Length: 505
Ligand code: NAD
Image (cartoon, rainbow, N blue to C red; front, top):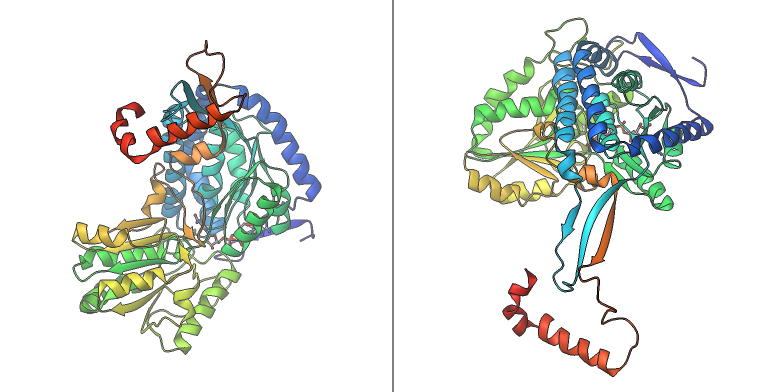
């Protein structure tokens, strides 16, 4: 393969699937310039027109679902069912939600002024310009294109730099945007490695980045240099707390899916199971056979296969090293524990017990098919262990007592805590998706994500246009000083302020 192209191979068979050209800095500059020209016309269209075009895009996605799922399954390695549910259905619903709600979310918003009531304020929203979307390889269709849709609704253009491991699906996505009626130059796709991603940041007005913590820090630093906003959606180490009153049948099913869906390559995957000692035997009895039944294979060759390969060799090596470290420190594999030989990047679905806090498997992101289980004697110890991580994206609590579970959920340092379920809030576009601590800054999804794709602008005007001047204008003098001194005492001081509550309106 020439140096200026990336070859894409099937993660299951090693077969070559295609190749894409690597964009140089000049190519990126040219792509951004084209998007910028197209964005001017796009931003002048009404919000209703933009919603109509994106609804057409949604319908094209629905019509071309099988083609999208086939390519996702080939290039990323996931079962077609997961491609359908986690990527296509998820994105279609996101478009459905935001095209239905954009009018409300982007409506000008009055700000009731609490003090200077002779004036009034409101917020309104203007597109930022060009949004750079830099994505990972685990949900390449959904994670790259959710932000593109939201960016376009807000009136922006986009330059997308998909992962070097899964670029082909983004070529199909671009075709779909155009088929749906998006102007040809408005969504640009550039391919390459980190340098191409860095070049994108130099030419856009905001960055929506999803990827590792290490890259996220570089992206945020570069955005800081340019003083442009960025949303960073980074790694996770989600703990699942299994309390002593958990419904074990539901918990076992949830842990199996939460740990092994997409072969564990989900930022929200269950990466640490923290179980109350009293329920460990019952849980294992139900969980072990479920995981043992997950036989990895080529999801293209056999539709009944529930779990595919890891997407790339680098990721398989990371998983293998973490499992070897755990075993060398005393962990035992109840199921799996090994890489599988062959051209594909397969790893056996694995349950580890006798896991201790010094093991890398509970401290570093695994991003693979491993459930390490730690045992505790009380809720407090579980909460402490959950919060020990430097990451805080998702967390899960399993309990039949809603009040107790919510009390614990509110103490866990994570962007989202689900009770008695896992992963699924990514499919709820009205809820914010984003982490705390090193899991990132900002949110995709939620109404604020659409507003954040815009410049928030503020207009303040006089409600009494006949006033000749304002009390805080020139000339200064003792009268002005004394007047303000009396005012802060009377209106903003404690006593009278309470009596004047009505004044706030
Ligand atoms: P990565 O950081 O290696 O790469 C992500 C993207 O950044 C790729 O497109 C890559 O080419 C690009 N890139 C690399 N260096 C860059 C630079 N200096 N400047 C700009 N772009 C650069 O991550 P990955 O391995 O593709 O993805 C896996 C990671 O993504 C995991 O940590 C996972 O948890 C995280 N992730 C997070 C979320 C979330 O919503 N929080 C979702 C999915 C994945």
